[in-house]
Length: 300
Length: 267
Image (cartoon, rainbow over all chains, first blue to last red; front, side, top):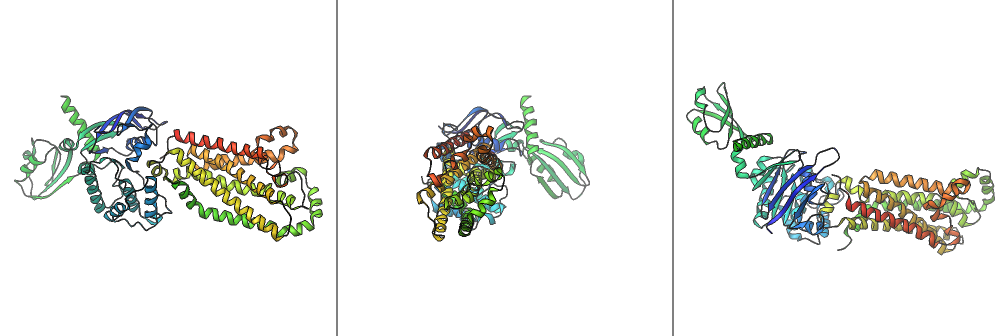
């Protein structure tokens, strides 16, 4: 019974547009699972199936060991959910809105709500209509956490949050995890997923391409590095360094891609005077690329 | 669990309800202010109306025009056309936005991510619809009674209540149709459109059928027939006709719950 979420052969097809295709996934209790993919890949579709907003075309989904269609109500009791696009009752104040949702959940600990509001610096007495996008997101987060659910499902949780609040959000995730809560969060932002998740599933065009431990993925992640030297450096020094590819050297600037650890490259450049070093965050496309190239290597 | 969704919906709608209450108050008071002079000049107006084409009269004032009694006056001026029009617009607007409005605004996701079952959301919205239309009916009734007292007319209070009840139930029937279409399609405009079109057809069918022979047998298909044809203001509330309207409402409500339970929600 350590399996909180079990998805078997889930297919959801809409008329013409793609949903998800034959998706299999399990998430264990206490795990923070990152659901990573570009926009329109099927992340939101999957999440909406879990909440019983839409019905699967094929496949079985259980949460807490219960079928999500037959036992949707019991399942939802223990789920906290943040929609990708937070749209709230504009006429209400934040406090009125949270009270309303709290009542629908048969009451919540209001002290905890206020604590969350304080941590996220969310003013509950203002009308929702007058709130910025980020502040609405905070209200969405509070209502997802306030009843201390066993499973928290967050669709693009940090989009629109300012960096300081993102940090607070990461702390919230870590605390929830420490208290045994399971988290499923979707994102198209690799650094965020790296930061908080234990495992990550890569989804693209409706198919779950792979599920990896975040550590394994990191070692395979492709990074683009730019190094600015004080003087010209010999081209030969940079051939044959493990993991370093696509070396371009022009006007004292070295550009290359690195897979895995940066250490061999750093050791090599240390003998010259380095003015600047820029490491670009790997974007999703690069991660997918590295996954495919990694896959090939495994096959050989 | 208390009826949170019901009360929330009523709170959200209280301004709209107030506006409609004021509107119906204004219309009804205006009619009552004119009543004494129309009553005194009744035969002149009746002659004038007699001269109009029968079809035109039947379309907006019913078959019999009788300005000499308060019942006849109220029937022609309010109950046949204006009152059902206002009650239908209000109830259809309410019903079409009840579920579909939240779906379009995107708040339905959050509402249904709580343990609230879908059928319960529909029933509570329906409850809010009933209460709102009845409040409007009560306002209508109150202003009518005050107006009748003010012009010193004589009317059977029980039959007046029956007539107001009848128009209230008609409003609820069409409001529930709009709710059902909204539940099925998730689009407020579709609920509005379908219920309005059925409203217009229902009205025309009931109004024109007595004058057009081939249409006559179909008159019983119009909900308006069950609302007005038994003339509750003069004959008292027709129990069978009221039950037909209530039965139709229950059919629409059942459809609303059933299709909404099975449907994919829009993003």
